[in-house]
Length: 195
Image (tube, rainbow, N blue to C red; front, side):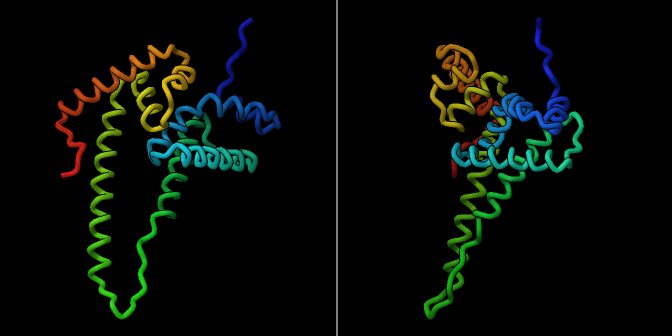
């Protein structure tokens, strides 16, 4: 007899009634999409793992407080929480440089240094943004392998296990992802280097 697959909404209902295992099913169902989304934003696997945990701590608090109102839209809701936590992390960590105004203080030293680094950050962000947009256009399975390899820094053995395929299949998907990415870069005339 086939087990009935419960919807996200049914699992949330069960969790709210005290069935702890229902949340685990939800997390396992959506973890790769949510984690990949976070990694694409922060580009750091360890940080992404922290933010992933923070995301579900917030999800649990919201569910337990009875404040969840996104009927049928659990994944987009969690993605929004994850996205906001990643953005908040960068807001808190990217403080403007400060300086103490001593005798040899020259405001133009600060301005020119800051200006160069801001320009570098903007250019770097544009390159990453262009590349992410191209990656999004890849076929789903190729995109998944490329993200796991380059953004999550996973081995092909781990990728094969995570995606339930052989290592050769994972390698093949990666090869085709890179070929397709190259084609897209040429077609769109995208520059992925600083001038």
